Length: 248
Length: 259
Image (cartoon, rainbow over all chains, first blue to last red; front, top):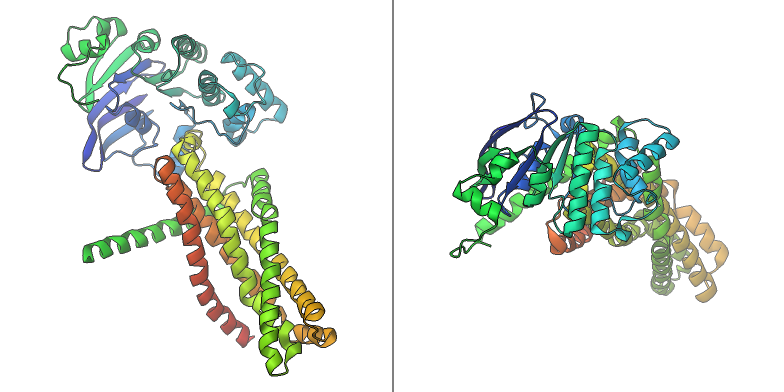
């Protein structure tokens, strides 16, 4: 369903992705982990065509989206919902307007039907009755939930999460983890999560891909991953810094 | 030095090309996709209604100064009653559209660039794209169309209040004969002058909206990027208005003389 082939991306002279290849099947829940700045979010943005690679292919249901222009990409993006690290809510709109955005643009529903779908989705993310609030009035966890509601209200086939629990306290982070599992199971969506939170990776992922040295370094089920003897994987899983490390 | 100049010229030409492409994309979008009327109305309100204060003050004081200055020069050659005619033609052909556009560029251009720039750095524009919405359809077209509608209306207001204020200064303050002043104003200010003002204002509306949207959509990251985009939107819009005005004056006056 989602496949990348030999993806390469540079920022100026600095390579960020250097031959990234993997495949994600329909309905699968995959977590991409890796150290800060290793190119996880860049990779995620390539999957939905927000960034274009220097070389390689991104195939969505067999269609190579790298060759597409922005207008053609809009058609493919209707299959996706994306939750951003900073939520990226439209701050000039209310919560209801944010959540209804995708519905209003692409589905010709009555106002009553739109309001019902918005209320249902807000209920699903445990935020009932917040329709009239502005994003500025919400906490970080609530903003993430509204971002998730906006991404799933039109029932996409694939949901992408960019660092969904970063910046949240462990309890709110845990509730977001539960929410991601709930959305995955209830809507039967393909889920791709970029995170460096190992707890999220263990709870939500059916498979973990680890990025290291600008490519996919390791892949496996969470239990295999956490038991891996590989020193690079071990260091990341255990969260142990090399005393000689100078890169922060 | 040559390398720097070449780089600057290349970047400038590339920027010009990208603004032209943005204009083309907006043009195609306007005729191909359904416009969001609610957004368009809001933008007309923001660009048009909210700019009235600054535009009316500018128009009024420009007309008053022009009347006083023209009167003092014309009085020496006993042409006092031609004062309002000069004000009328000047306000219609040049001062009305140009000063209105410069004031709107300062107020609205900065706001558009800052708003879109902030949306870019907070990933709101990426969010739009993930929601299968083209930023040009949703952000640029309503602002561009609203500016095309609002600028001519604001310019007419500015010209009207400018001439009115000049009449008050000329007749009430400086003692020019009102009947001859009015007669000369109507005799020398023609319909074509009003049409020139409207055409210029329509063009400047597009200049302000396109440059400001472009600067916002392509701004650098962080607060510094937004700040720079805002400044550049105002500066480049203002300079483009002044340069375009020269060429529009030549072309439109030539066409008017042939009519």
